[in-house]
Image (cartoon, rainbow, N blue to C red; front, side):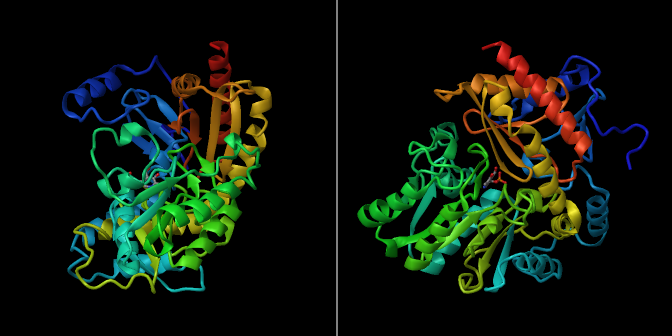
Length: 449
Ligand SMILES: Cc1ncc(COP(=O)(O)O)c(C=O)c1O
């Protein structure tokens, strides 16, 4: 139910940013690190459902969801109530030193989402990058090996360990010096730009061959490799799904050599693709799964979930002060209630609905090269020329900024793609509105060709 002052659809009352938003932007410039990259001048004042209001009373339809974090929408009453109740009972105790029931309660629910063939255990942290750091440490500890294999285009975070795996944009690494040694990157299957002309289902066979015949024969002896880490759908890298067979092949290679297969589901997990985990579409059994973003509906919580046989480290080998904080866990429990109680099914349904309406964009707009994704993780790649596939980051930026001025929030992804990652609560009316705004913005950008 929305109240009299609330809306389900955008409401833009003035040229953006408005006067109050401008004040906040100036204030921010004075005190906040300039390393943050704001694509357009949105100033958020309050949020409800799929709507963000700015301090001038403009309302935006949010198809970015705080980088795929607000899975249940903004300030869902069930989540707010859970946070408020828990905040009045116990805010913090440090699960690294003391017991509290909240950690095993959430862990049990996460473990219940994992393949039934194995028992899994959970370690809680506060952010995606911490889950990656913990998984690197666990994989090294469990295998007593140190080499790691990751993929070009993948993003795993910005702390020094995870940054060593991240190979998305060089700005993210530039001037930060020597990172972890023993990390090798290999290409990620990218069907739209597949040099061998493979399809979305078949692209990547040559990468598996490269891994087996070159990397594991000429560079790293398999018995020195601790883990292969992969995003089942590249998020930051362009919303590019890996084909199911590709993930199955990675699993086969990992099983063969005792290498840990780490699935980074920080962006793609928690029901966003219409299944709890994006790897579920491929039917594999990973050793370690990472989650954050959508897990807490905006409260800072992450987890890595590992096979019990893998998570065998000794007390003291890994810990954290805030990880598994009761308030964040309350938010995550409420989030799971909602995701498992219908939002995951809605993500599947609305994803199909949106794809049904935008799949033909490449034939309707000459600057749209590709539309791809799963559920509500949808990427749109913009090109200057569909034949040469020349990347068009400037046109992509025009579409995103044009959409903002029409009241729709989206984000960039990769060099020249748009990411569409709304909260999982959206309905057809909101999807239609977003599609209409995107189409207007694409048409406008096309005129500047
Ligand atoms: C796949 C993936 N892994 C890890 C991270 C890092 O998460 P955080 O920004 O919470 O550290 C991100 C963030 O975008 C991500 O998309």
